[in-house]
Image (cartoon, rainbow, N blue to C red; front, side, top):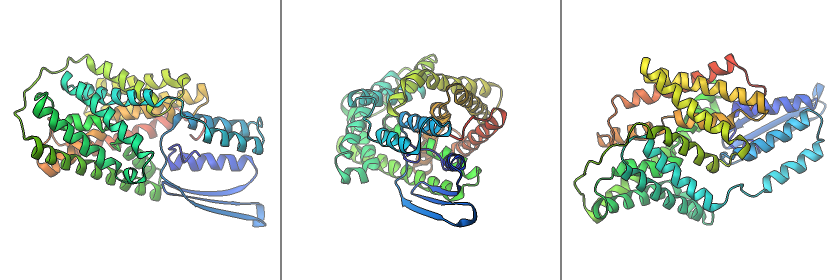
Length: 390
């Protein structure tokens, strides 16, 4: 269940070892995004149990992750027997989503609009990013009822967002930045966070899991880019191209509002418990404040390193005070820091030879930022170790 809720392999294996040791068992675990292997034995190998299962890559459900971790904590402290824990895990697995579909759709809309606001473009882009994010959410709901749509969801939402943006540019609002609106609408699919986790796994010498996660993230990125590229081509063929009208840029203070809106919407999207919401929002503000403050005096990648370090220390502090997984809080800060959008923009520059926002040496910047994030989290775990493995 911890795998199902998006726990990285290195944290998951350490957590399982902790439980097995508490139960007086010798054990070995190998985790990857698509398979789990358990080997459990008694002293002297009189009895040995091996279990291998094919699983789907985990999805982020931070509320259920907190509940599952709470069950583990109660087992380790003797408050629950194994049978009671098993029953509790079944209850968690079957529980309904904490937020309604209407609220989740609104959160998707806010996340797209907030990202466009964070990029500092214009109110026009913010408005249309929010509108197309709702359209993307409708396709996500459809994918829950159709396996065919599930298999082609990522390129499909990119195509739909791209065609819609081209139509709006031609007939309604020529001042929208088409490519930025597409990116904002599909931002929840951009695998920046997954790539950062993959590099963290590789740095922890979990080579199989890390490599698999890198390749999965790259394939997802290619599908999204191809969908956007195809959608723009179809949109221009159907509606023609229009001359871009440069709108007034957003004032700089809106970036702080964007962080608040983005972190609040991610609480709903990641199903975070309300009692952890204030910590999660604070993590986003800490990440942004530290990274931009450091970037004034150092390079942008050093800003990302210090931002990740601050997020890591803050999430480990949350882990010690609240006794809940540090990843619940770290997730928000990392999403603010992770340059998933820069990866997409860099891919656009590579294939088309142009970029839709001004960014020099974007490929080099993206790689350095990913490395800085991983290093910041590692240093944070040394400076203030978490109380538990998650």
